[in-house]
Length: 238
Image (tube, rainbow, N blue to C red):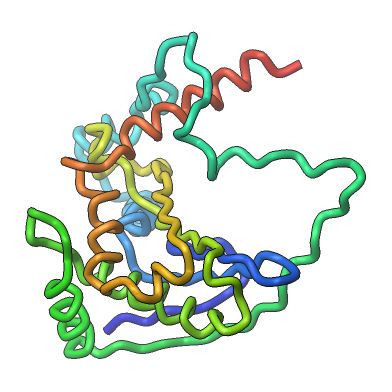
């Protein structure tokens, strides 16, 4: 059974599309691989609190030098098209930041049967040669399209809606899945409201899957660019 919540805080899955007066942000939290690090951390904490012995492998993994785990790019690197969603432009002095919209909590519960049916429906219209999408791909696409469809009557259909997903990047950088530190990046997907609502569910799910499939994903390179940018910012900061 999967439970989703709609909230006004940062969550593993987040979507954003503009309204006539301000940007409307809707957040969705669902179970995802990015949360597995928290589970591992809790297990490690339990072992430490109960004075249980760690294996040599877990000790070595837990003490990896975090500064060297993400290989940086060449020092000549300058941000190009990889970080548009992660670098915020400063607000002009003459403009005051807009107030965040009012949000409310909403819970949606899906039975295992409903999840299986939803995935089956999305699979019928997917566009991937691999022939695979996950249940999370299907349900994320379904919620994104449904919320957008509900807001569409009061929005410009040519405006874009952006959906983000938090992803555990350990496997993309050959980092042990047992490493307890936070290693997470985001994938970003943006479509016009009209295209999102009228496109097949499987087509949307295919875009989400392609962004996390190691064979087609740019997460490894994008993570390296982000780490390099942060490293350079720290070096050259006044």
